[in-house]
Image (cartoon, rainbow, N blue to C red):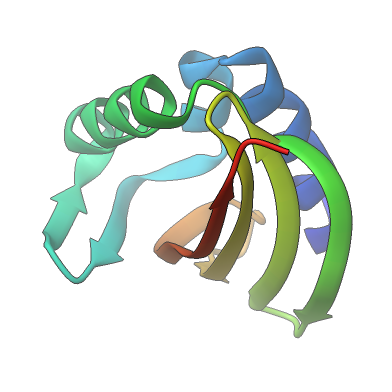
Length: 115
């Protein structure tokens, strides 16, 4: 799976609230690195994703604002509609040789409430 396919599938899964589906995109030893700490392995990443979706409800893509990929990395910035309103999200990921996420650096850096 290429980086753009990973993005498209991820947005579909997040919009559907499918934690198990999103979790399949990660390598077994993956890490999600945030300012508040690191989620290591699928059990901790599952807990992070469950909380992330509980806080925002859904992520319906409005626009893909920036997208860049290399042979082992992908990063994007997108505007999404959540259950709480419009937000701007970003993500940077290092991928393993099979295209699964090895390290992720996610974030929400703009939130405008309901539209």
